[in-house]
Image 1 (cartoon, rainbow, N blue to C red):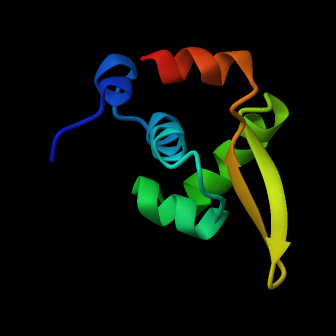
Image 2 (cartoon, helix red, strand yellow; image 1 turned 90 degrees about the vertical axis):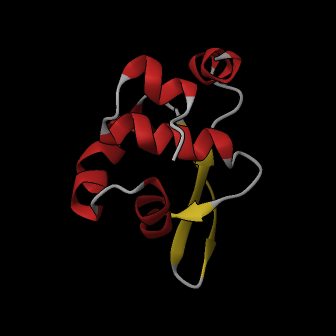
Length: 86
């Protein structure tokens, strides 16, 4: 499996894998359980990292579906814009 440029540049860490998945799937929104699965990150690890991602406005809540909040990458965040350039 070929690693993305983001992972090759910043390292294969859970937060980088989360951001990499969301950047590559920016047109869709997901519940955090699916984000953890697709990013290959333990759910408990994602729950520890998630508040910081929300606080820095790297991810945004888009809607609620069946009681679960769905999230996607915040494409209007300047940091996200720079990551997309990579």
